[in-house]
Every structure is written in C-alpha cells, then in structure tokens.
Image 1 (cartoon, one colour):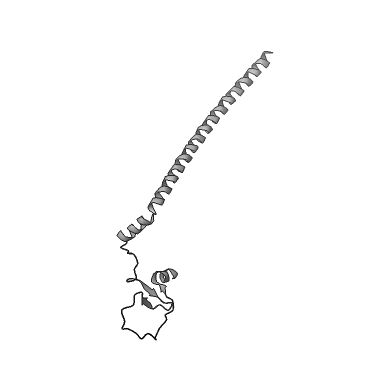
Image 2 (spheres, one colour):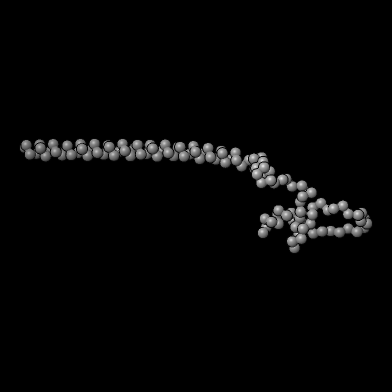
Amino acid sequence: MARINLLLLLAVIATALYLVHTQYLSRQLYTELDRAQQDARRLETERDRLQVEKRAQATPLRVEKLAKEQLQMRTTSPAITQYVRPDGSVIPAVAPAAPAAPATATTTRPAAKPATAARAAR
C-alpha cells in the first residue's frame, strides 16, 4: 500500500510540475501576442500618418510651387508654345504678324500636336 501511495504522490507531483510549465508557456505566448498587437497598432498609426503626409506633399499648389522654384518651370502661354508636326518640323503657336493676305486665299494646316505631347509619345 505504501508503494502505491508513493507512486500516486509522484504522479501528482509530476502533473503539477507539468501544469506549472504549461501555464508558464501560456503566459509567455500571451505576452508575445500582446507585443505583436501593440506593434501592429503602432505600424497602422504610422501608416496613416505617412498617408496624410503623402497627400499633403502631393497637393497641386505645392507641386506647382516646387516646379517654379526648384525646376525653374513656367506656365504655358501661346507666346512660348511650339507645336510639332508628325514629320518633326516645329510650328510656332503664335505666328509672326504677316502682311495682310487677300481674303480669298485661305490655307489650312493639318492639326499639330503640342511639343509636350510629342515628347511624351517618344
């Protein structure tokens, strides 16, 4: 009888130690999960902040300001616009003042593309 009691006591101690070890692992996993969730919330907050910053950086007014200041670009006007024909010849947008032509003689030009569109097509 003493042997059975001793054997049962060892079994109870072994299961108690196993239970303590299992609870310890469970707590470790829970703290790891909590840290991962905190990191996910932090990253999501940072992503939202960066998206707001990106939208602020890409406003048309800011882009135009940077283009004028840093790239020395200017807005288009008929005085500086040139059109490029498909054969590559350049047509000024504003034709120089020519002497008055007879009213009966009319010339038609084929439609030309703006220079910027011709460059983008290359």
